[in-house]
Amino acid sequence: MAHGEVLEFEEYVRTRQEALLRSARRLVPDPVDAQDLLQTALVRTYGRWDGISDKSLADAYLRRVMINTRTEWWRARKLEEVPTEQLPDASVEDGAEQRADRALLIELLDVLAPKQRSVVVLRHWEQMSTEETAAALGMSAGTVKSTLHRALAKLRQELQSRDLDGRAGEREAARRIQEPRRVPRQGGRERERCAA
Image: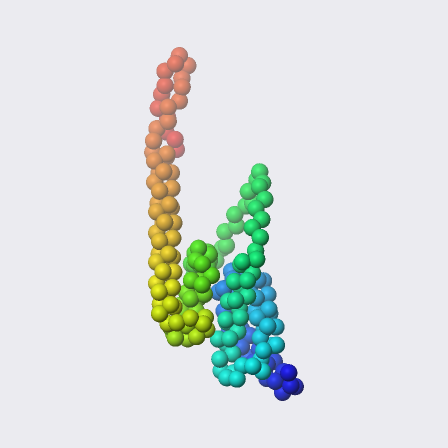
């Protein structure tokens, strides 16, 4: 790579780094993994920088590299589950409702296949058009539309399922509080006792 192209790449990274890191954060939930993803994508792009004739498409190229890299990592992951007697404490982030919604959305995105997740992130978070999303992912506009339709339906179904599970748990807790308990007394007779 010529010295001028190296400087051009460095300037591109300097000016676009924040936006690219936001894209990486939307593809992988962990901030450290997002930084690793972006760095890996930049290294892979650096070697092919002179092959990108239209530098205005560099963002789309880098996003595609990040998506491919994330997919490679996802396929290569090892599922390591270690049984334990004691569950770790669940930490609740004390923050604004917006943070909770964002965390829920990122969690919900995990139910999607990598291709569906990529389409949702590019169309709704990156606010790319259908055509831009299709170009970035190397698929037709029709495939983007149908994939997005199925992904959003799956997200809706997951949200409804979680909402119903939450309501069922609330109803069960309310029933237990209101239902009298039978407590044995001496002499074999039972008496009612409020659970509250």
